Length: 168
Image (cartoon, rainbow, N blue to C red; front, side):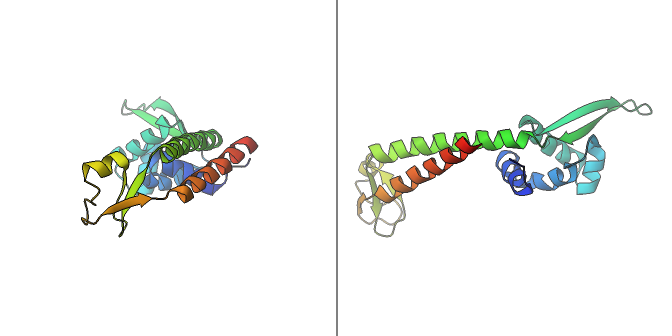
């Protein structure tokens, strides 16, 4: 599987936030780029740039080399984007998504849910009892909600993600 720009964008956005994408674009296909040059290119303060780099580092999407500046005596960090790590993270994010969907499907299958006529809120049976089956938003009477379509959609999405995972 070849890593596309779209895949990189999805993974980075989920893990480190959308604000990090300009930094990733500046780092892509380059090795050992100075954090000061990155900050200058992004027109950001060095602290903000470092924060973004640390978020990527905690997800293991970048690596760095530390070198001492001979004139000032400071350490300068040179960063490299790890393109190959994206494949692994895509797989991990899909696994996590499948687990969350399975948990939700379990909750949907086990419980009863209630909605008011205007669909302000959807409450579990216990929550609906706490509010005397009256919507806390609009005050109208809550009725049992048929969640069969929700369960079907969840099962379908789980099946699709598991198929994607099997083909990876």
